[in-house]
Image (cartoon, rainbow, N blue to C red; front, side, top):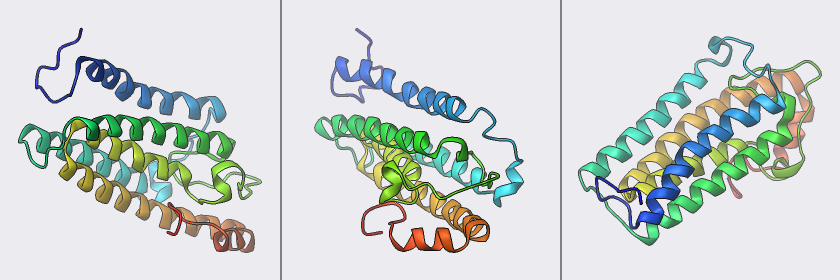
Length: 197
C-alpha cells in the first residue's frame, strides 16, 4: 500500500484513489480538447484580455493556499469531508468534459470566435451558459476538500470563481459582438454558472 507521508488522508485506499484521480483529471482535460478540436489554441494569449493568465493564476493560488492551510492545520475537516471532496472533484471533471464534448470545435483555451460560430444549446448548455467553468470550480473545490481543509475550500471557491467571472465577462462580450441577438436571446433563458445565478 502507498503510504501517506504527511498523514493528511483518511485511509490507504484514499491515498491510492487520490493519486489516481488528481493526475487523471488533468490528463482527461488535456486529451478531450485535442480530440474534439486539434487546433483549439491557435490565437495568442492576448486575444482574451489576459483572462487565460488570470484563470491560471487563480488556480495556482487555490492549490498553493489549500496546501499551505493543510500543512499548517488551518481549518481541517478530515474523513467524510475528504471523501466527499474526491467525489466532487470527479463529478466536476465529468461535467466539464461533457460540456467540452458538446462545445466541440468551438472550444478554445483563449477567447476566440470561430468562423460560422453558433450558440451551443445542447447538453448542459440547455440550462447553463458556461458549464465547463462550473465543472472547473467543482474540480478545485473538490481538490481542496480532498486535502481536508474547509478554509482552503472556501478560498478556492472564491478565487477560482472570481477568475472565471472575469473570463466570462470577456467571453460574453465577444459572443454578443459576434452573435448579437442570437446570444442575447440565449442569455435570457439560461443561468451563467449555477442554477439561480
